[in-house]
Image (cartoon, rainbow, N blue to C red):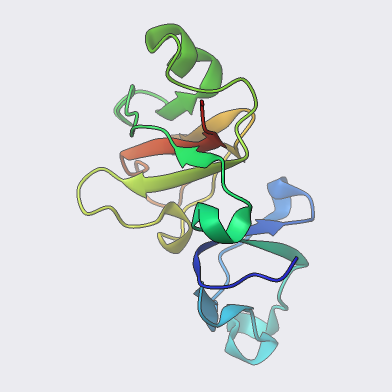
Length: 155
């Protein structure tokens, strides 16, 4: 299937997440796609191996897919920001489908996509949720995030 008029992308690092380092992306948007150039990296680092997928409005994806509401159950003041799918389901019964297809994560203050913040993430998965741990950050504390899931629509 070709992708027409995508409105978002998800880029996933294919390597060991424990060795992930901050890379400078040349491009990461729905119009142009994802580009990481070695020439843009500090200290002669090289881009990692990524996979990219596009999400699009239901008429272009075969329909039947909808976003949930936004969820923000935790603040980063403890060990980090824990937006685990299992906890979100317990606190919001019936509001998240059994098999989410995609997760969107943004900051609570300005809706900045998490992937553009430059933090290290412990979990970033539609089937597990999202976790940003304070101990994995170069700064003292991670940001506060909220999540939503892309699920098959109920008829």
